[in-house]
Amino acid sequence: MKNSLFLPLVSSVLLFSFSNCSSNSNEDITDDSVDDASVVSVEPTYFTTDNVTITTIPCTLSDGTETDCYQIVTTSVPSDHEMGPWCPDNISDDAEAGGIWLEDGEVYDVDGAFVENLAAFYNDTNWQMYDSNGDIFVTDTEEDCENAANPNVGDEYENFCVECLPSYITDLSQTWVIPVTPVLQSSATLFATGPGGPPGGNTAPSTRGVALNGIEFSAPAPVDNILGAYTLAPFDDAGGHINVHQGYHYHAATEGIADRHVISQEDGHSALIGYALDGHAIYAFEDADGNTPTDLDELRGHSDDIRGYHYHVDEAGNNNFINGLKGAYAI
Image (cartoon, rainbow, N blue to C red; front, side, top):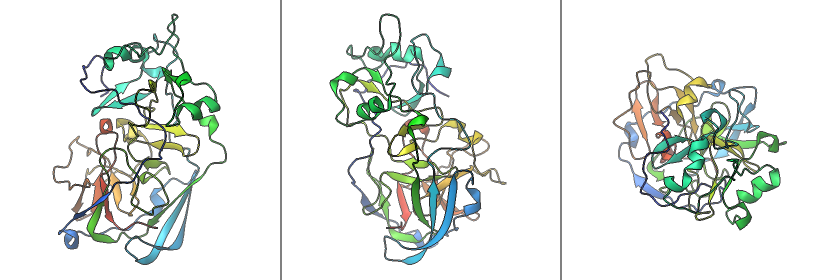
């Protein structure tokens, strides 16, 4: 459940940017259980077909394995849910007019009250994102969207709510390559804590995986690029927002993911929501009864007899999906 604004925070100001130009800082973790974990191949028929095209191509993985991969080409526009809204127009607007904010492990509604009380939320009186009529300052052109989302955002966008619209996505496609059958590694790749790039050499910057609707599971939204710029870049209720170069992408698996294109499991296990770059499946945070796994490894993965090794996404408020890759990835 999303939280009220008036939960006190002690943290310093953290501002999310659309930019994915963050440095890689990955390390290896040794996993002695790799031989005990089974693998299950990617099932391409689980993906939507309205906006996703999948072909099989030869590929080379990060460990040197030459194998077959699925090349997944997507329009970066979901076919199973609407995008937005992100920024409310006035401080009187309710939660239906805005998106969400992910902060300190919690999910908050970006309604008018949230924007009105940003100074209290961050204990910083420089926050004043609305005028005397209560109208919120929102970027309203593609140029403003790009400029305000730049890591070096100018002073003219201070106290703006940054909103990039679906109409800004034109003729954009994304291509992901994942192995048909995962190749487990004895030394897994652990992503950097917080915002970070993918394993070195990967051609899909800041990508953790691909949802079954073809939308990117992106790395945590960067928080240090525009610290002090006093901008807000909300996510929509689906946990996504738009970068005009990257398209629409997710930073969290929110509660509403169950209403989108997922594959339910007959035994009540968490639903399949996508695949990681190493070909291992990614499942929802909770199972059908609202329970969460208690035996996940450092990568947020574990094994069972039906699904083999697989991941479970992090809680939405953590601005994160998974913590690393147990398998080799395409280079």
